[in-house]
Image (cartoon, rainbow over all chains, first blue to last red; front, side, top):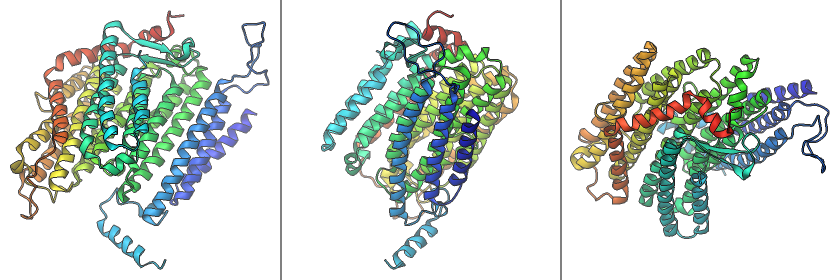
Amino acid sequence: MVLLLAITAGVLFASAIYMILRRSLMKILVGLLLISYAVNLLLFASADLIPARPALVAADSLLPPATYADPVPQALILTAIVISFGLTAFAVVLMRQVYGTLGTDDLYEMRCTDVPCQEVEIASEEELLEEPL
Amino acid sequence: MIALPILLPLLFGILSLFAWQSVRWQKTLSLAGATAQLGAALWLLVTVQQNGIQHLPVGSWPAPFGIVLAVDLLSAIMVAVAAVVALVVAAYSQVAIDPPRVQFGYYPLFFFLLMGVNGAFITGDLFNLYVWFEVMLMSSFVMLALGGERPQIEGAIKYVILNLLSSTLFLSAVGLLYNLGGTLNMADLALRLPRLESSGQVTLVAMLFLVAFGIKSAIFPLFFWLPASYHTPPVTITALFSGLLTKVGVYALFRVFTLLFVQDTAYTHIIILVIAGFTMVTGVFGAAAQTDLRRLLSFHIVSQIGYLLMGLGLFSQPALAAGIYFMVHVILAKTSLFLVAGIVEKMDGSFNLKELGGIYSARFGVALLFLLPALSLAGLPPLSGFFAKLALIVAGFELQQYPIVAAGLAVSLMTLYSMTKIWNEAFWKEPHDPAHRPAHKPISAWLWVPTAALVLLSLLAGILAEPLLNLANQAAAQLVDPSIYIQAVLGAMP
């Protein structure tokens, strides 16, 4: 079981990194989604996965059963899912904003904060204006 | 109530949400909130300094099981400096942030950012640290993109993608560490990790933490998002980010590499030291090539991170103390430099060094406000940067780490070079275009008074170097001996 989870998480990580390294914003978004799934699986596997009873304490006892499944990672995953949901929602809106402002989802055309490219910026805006609507 | 630095920003954030319609109310609330925050932070600092490490089991769950908040001297110092920066930026924002940005939630975001930052400083639980990081990041994402100008959007996309990736790495590292240690309480982990047989796995996880926090604190070679995004929002937001965000990453590195990952310092801390050297050098060379004031200063943030890491990488009590004092120094100096850059832009309408000029003859006071923190950053005596670098370099000599000492000294010189460049271009030279002279219109007191106060504090940090270094030394003493922290959080040592 652990081996299966490990392979799945590994494949997810690999595909996510491949997607994140691409130029298109949409593909990067898919990559970010995949990597958050991969981490959730990793968290899930971080407890020893054993066939055991849930960590519920019986009414007449102070201790959980002798072998019990560790509930902490599941709580962590729940938190992580909620957080990554919020962040992904923001990323989607931001990418939509990017497309609305820049008219492209190609990262290669978003270099103006890295290199001085006033000329490029003006040219691309003119191109945008010339484009038939 | 050590949770006050988290609760106060939360309260004022919610209050500003209620005052969503009224720009004036939000501005008043921001000043009140930041002042209250500063009071709480100073009270916390005094308490921790006198009574030792404070801790609070949240929800009364006993320490290793529930989430625990723990404030040692390092956390208290960081919370206090963050509160100073917050108050100054809140005052500066009164006129520097345009009303549309206020209407779209600048102040609630400001408070939630502060809440995330403080939470990260005072939590004693690794997963909780992740949560606070996300609170902080979410606010910073929106703050960066607020306004939606083209450069902002371009900068934000890079910032968001790389920081999301770093959070993911952080979370994977937390998962792996939970698997190894079986707990997420930092004190408990510090107790259990040295007993593990597989120290190789611990080192592996340590490296994962180094990469994750490294992206957030902009170390070499992971810093590229910073100069690509920090110069795009209004300068107030940049000042806030430069004072707080990367420093949270450095704080997290200080925390995990003094408390948790100290088994194999010959390996991990040497790597940190090498990275520190490269971070200093690349940052300052990057700055030398810039002609935009904000981009130049952004590269300097990277360069200064190198010095902070140097304190951590040397890993002795004097070095850590020097690192902590350096952190205080650099937060004050860097934030005031960005605020001065904002005033320059208000006077002259540009951040481009080629277009700027003549500020010195137009306004001597503004030039002075720039000169003091700039020289402090370069490390000239009697300013705070001199004492910070002196302490670091003495610590380096004691441990005979000569290459990093040489790098530190050379980078100081380069820092002086790029500060002189700004001075010559923006302040001293006459503008090429005589029509393009800085306007003589009065500068709002909301702009220059907070900036001057911060510069004055930075001066004081230099004059009061000895008491501050003593305080930093006490904080470092708590860091080099994890048993103090463990005992404070878990009670008696098992």
